[in-house]
Length: 165
Ligand code: SF4
Ligand code: SF4
Image 1 (tube, rainbow, N blue to C red):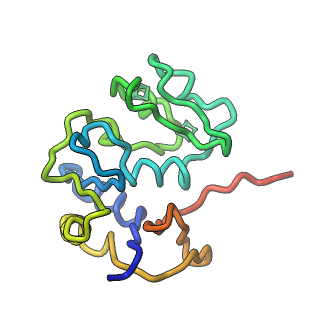
Image 2 (image 1 turned 135 degrees about the vertical axis):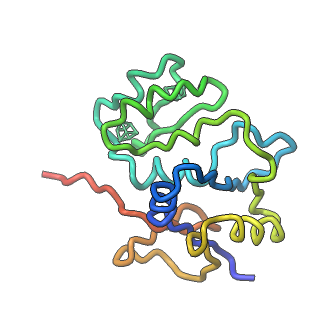
């Protein structure tokens, strides 16, 4: 088996726009008996790659639970133990960065896959819209909008880069 998967966030977003009733499967790399509330790969990828990293981030200001903060790299982090899934941050984000289904507290276990398990990984690929998740051996290739999320996951997305003056 190849070491990595490639998640095409651009195609995933298109699939959600084409069919608003679609419920995307979730993937995590942190096995747990209770996977409710875990941050999924899609959420981690979104905050790392497509979030504009606003200086005075309105998502942080609006959060009634102080659940959002920036890490040392300026990447938004959501504390799932504090988040009450009010979705105020989704509404206020001027760039539509966040998807409302990130905040579902009651996830369908049939749609949650632990990618440390090879069988689950293949089931995850099958459960995703066709062509959005593939096995890959590709390395980071910015020309193709492909970036490394972690040792197991490559993400294809438009990277937002702040221009330094
Ligand atoms: S959904 Fe969670 S993170 Fe977003 S504003 Fe509400 S409590 Fe804060
Ligand atoms: S408001 Fe949106 S784009 Fe700005 S930091 Fe928050 S999630 Fe990122």
